[in-house]
Amino acid sequence: QEDAISYASWGVDYLKYDFCSMQDEQGRYLEAPEKSFGRMRDALNATGRPVVYSLSNWGGAGIWRWAGQVAHAWRTGIDLFAVWDAAGAKELGLPNFLQSVMSMVRGQQHLYSFAGPGHVNDADMLVVGLDGMFPYGIVQECPAHVAGCVPGNYVTREQWGK
Image (cartoon, rainbow, N blue to C red; front, side):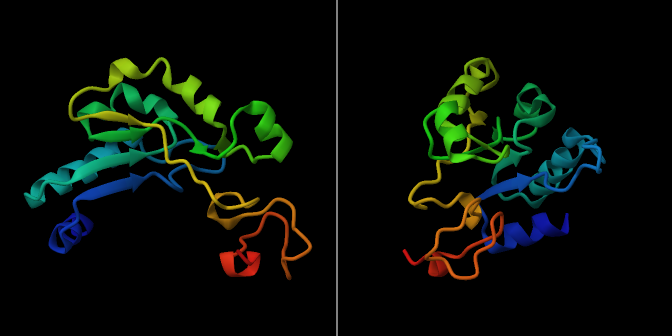
């Protein structure tokens, strides 16, 4: 409730509410996503300010089946990366939290019926222009020109030099 009141006082028009760290070590939800997301919906509605409300749990728990009752948009899959297909993803050694464009497209095919006026499937954004970097500045292999680089760690654009 306190966060929703703050968002409204700041004039926030769009909230993408993430479900990060809501699972235990075995991957079980600590609380049903519908309950957590519904609580924020109710808090936003109570402020009286219209806010476009978007949910993000990377398509887990069949979110598209119930999210139209809770929000305006919802993530339908894992993070998207600027690579065309599974072969390209494999060649780049993408970690399992990233998917190719075609994987995303195939994952959307059966979801059209869950969207409609005022509620839509969110296939994620396409991150481009990182020239060998994964989204969030994480590298899997360190180019020679990046001093102090450690594979799997964050690298800033300044360190990368572009």
